[in-house]
Image (cartoon, rainbow, N blue to C red):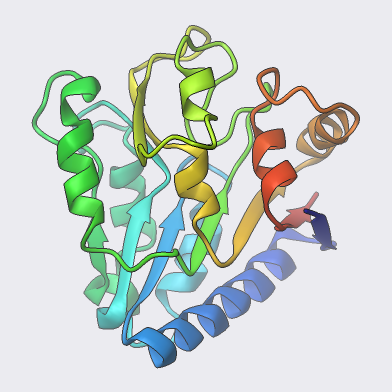
Length: 230
C-alpha cells in the first residue's frame, strides 16, 4: 500500500483542488450506485474545506455524510464535531445531504455502539470518500495510542465498525470507526496543514509501530492520498 502526496503552496489552493476532487468522486459514486458516501473528520483543519464543499454544485440529496469519530458530548457543545459540521458543511447547497450523526442519547459511548452500527447500515459501503486527520501523537479518527482500546480498534479481523474509546491524553469519551471500517473505502485522504503536522508525518513514515502511531495502520493497509499545505 502507498501514501501519495499532493502538496500545495496555500490552504486556499488545497481546499479548491480537494473540494473539486471530492465532488468528482461523489458524482461517480452517484452515477454508479444511485448514492454516494462521504466520511469526514472534525477539528479545525477541515472547516475551510467544508465551506468550499458546501457551495459545490452536486446532487447533495443523494449524498450520505457521516463522521469518522465523535466526542461524546451534546451536539450543542463547542467540542462536538457534529456542531462544526452543521455550521460549515451541511449548509448552502449541501444542506440537502443526508447526515448520519454518531452521538446518541446514551450517556456512555459503549452503550451506543449497537445503535451507531445499525445507523451505518443506511449508508452505502464501501465508502466513496473518507477524509482523515492526524494528531501530533499519530492518532487518526479517535484511535488514540494512549487508549486501552487501541489494539481492538486496530484489529484487522474485527467485525466491529465502531469502538468506544477513552483517551488518556485528550478530554471526552469518543466513538470511532475501527480500522477495518476505515479501510472499507474507495478513497482515503489524509488532510493536513502546517509544518508541524508534516514533521509528525515524517516520523510516522520512519517506523512501523502501528500501536505507537495508529495512522500507520491505515497507510500500511490501503492507498492513502496526502493533501497538505503550509
